[in-house]
Image (cartoon, rainbow, N blue to C red):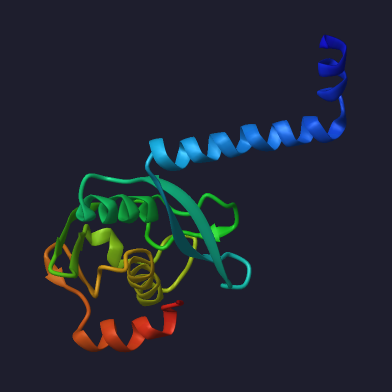
Length: 168
């Protein structure tokens, strides 16, 4: 019987199926035990300003606000892929982020007012970040930006321009 067992598990089909089963078990473990969420980040290319989407797996925080803070901090770190523009200068820091009744209030340091050294348009970068929060967090209805505690965009910016970058 042991010769039949060895023969059965030496075939390429069985080896491939075993590998797929192990891979599936790892994926299930990642999903249920590591508590990761897939988030999308949009950046622009250095060459022609085209849009590139990066997917990242971020660990869930204990609160909705914590999840949004992690997303904002990852956005400030910039793209992982080479030849992509960051949305904000690398000196930009997140002073505070509050989530209240569907509205996110984001307060940056004054560095956020300038375009990154690599290039880019500041208002487009804010639009892209705004749309990214709306796309990744369905429970958010609006995002309001502040730089050093001063509101930086009006109501019209948030509603008219965000529609241009909101992909379903």
